[in-house]
Image (tube, rainbow over the protein chains, first blue to last red):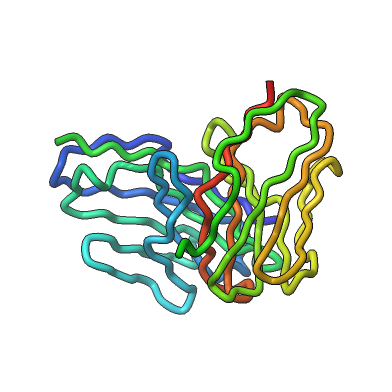
Length: 111
Length: 112
C-alpha cells in the first residue's frame, strides 16, 4: 500500500521567515496530494492540494510543489505568522483512493 | 451549521464497556470515513463508506463496527473497550473518493 513519509517532525521558525515541509510517497499511481493544518483541539483542515497534472500551486502565502518523477512534494509557507503555528499533515491517495497521511510536522512560529 | 459534526467531543469510560460515537455531515457528500489519531498525532484510516456501503476496512479489531443508516451519518460502535483504544477519533466526508475530505472536530476517547 501507499507509504507517506514527512519531514521534519518539528519546525521552529522566526515570525516572517519561511517554513518548508517535505513529503515522499511510494505509490506511483497516486495523483492527489492534499495538505492539512490541525490546530489544537480541532480536526484537520484542508489548506491546499495539488493534483498530478500540475507541478506547483500557490494560494497567497502558501505554495505546494510536486515532483512526480522523484515522488515527493513540499509545502512552503512564506512570511510566517504566529497563527501559522499548528501541526501540518501531507497526504496522498493510494489504492482505492484511500488517503494515507504523513506523520505530521509541528510548526512553531516564534514572535 | 457545522459541516461535519461528531458527538460526543469527549468520552471517558472504563475498560470493558461498549460505547458509540456519532457522526453527521450536512455537505451532501456520499463518502464518509473514520480515522484514528494516536498520541503521537499519527492519522490512520479505519473505515470508509460510500453511499452506505463499506468500501475500506483497514486492519481494525472487530470490536469496532461502523454503521451507516444513511448517506449523511456514519456511527462508530466499539465493544469491550481496551486501554489501547484511547485516542482521538475523527469522522470525515468527501464527495466521491477523489476529492478533499472534510474532518469533524474529533472525539477524544479515554479508556481507564
